[in-house]
Length: 331
Image (cartoon, rainbow, N blue to C red; front, side):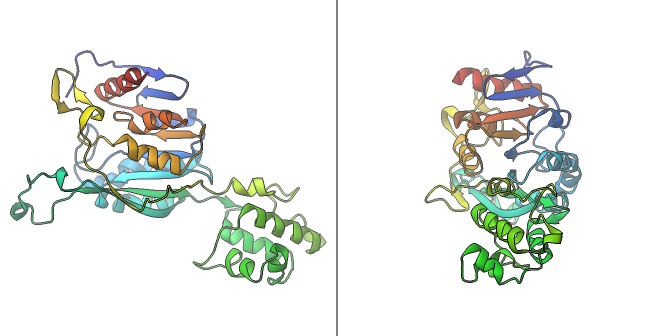
């Protein structure tokens, strides 16, 4: 599907978005640090020019992008990775190797209307697929090349104080030792106010020779605000779970091919309500959202609607042209 008047070069900008016709690999270093990355790229189904023919080529397709994301991400960055189940499965090791920590797999259940009885199960030999996944990852921050869990333990141990005194520092019975200094799967990220209490106590009562403790720069202890920068944002709206029952996209929101009003421009266009859901859950107004594989720029449009700033690229001139039109129409 090509448009005769589709541009071959171009950008679109307003106060909230920066959209480019081109390869995001050439743009990442110019974009500001992201709080949210919404990835909806190769599925291994030849869904667009440049996509792989099956899932086996998907990890290599994503590798340079994941590497670039990791260079620009911070402890506050959340990645929402859209894909098929098998596509996600083969990319997960790439993400994990580059410092992305798995949080949760969310399922978009499109319902039976997605297949509308048009599947020959005797031929495909499986249950009809009406879902795809949107997997939440956060970038795993490190201090002195250690995970936050290991670094907290090391700093308290370095102070020479008994571990039970961490409870005294925090004013709790046993939470600090049992959760904040735990080295297993029961570890909890200390709330900023508790971290600051531990840091202050260690620097007041710990071995003077090792001060400062709990410091980023070796000159002063970290504050509560400093510590908060190492945790991703998240706010779950009331009533939502990890299964999103939302029918396939129809109606005015579905972008059509000009002069062929019944033909959808993009086979896998994401609903704006789902894009708004994940963006608002993991960011605050004014934060930066990356959409590396723009398509019709659904994540970027949703980001603008909820007061975030979006940066996106799209390689295909037709999709770029149609996607930009959504912003111009919305005004």
